[in-house]
Length: 187
Image (cartoon, rainbow, N blue to C red; front, side):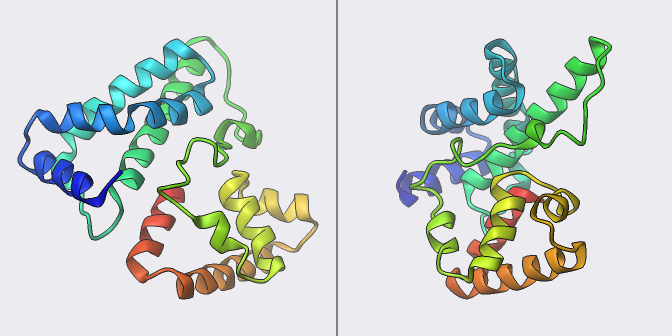
């Protein structure tokens, strides 16, 4: 998507112009549906999540700040959080408990993220392997810091240090604004 079109959509959102929703759906609908489906793993639920996400996007349109995150990052977070909420809601209603320790539920991977929007993995290869491994586990495999520590057989303190240093190294590659957008995906 061109930055001009993205800027136009942001302007329409801030003006509360309904055309913004049509453009968002047209340009991001399929990708956001993929994000929702990756979490809920059900076509009908994913469609519900997408619809609820667009309602939230519309209601929160005045809270979007282009200086803090790219439009896609903001849309991604709303959709992902809505999908997780939907999953919790459905699980609670059906009497099932969500297993927080099963990182699969939150593991979105990178398939739902368009490569033309983010080039994180390509730049991740530019930092030392010990930092790559930790960042990959935390951001792309959806592990918590404790899960990464257990899985990689690395002390938790070392995981935290490598995360901090790895992000510092990525920050050198990205400008500070882009790095904030990247981090906002996972916070």
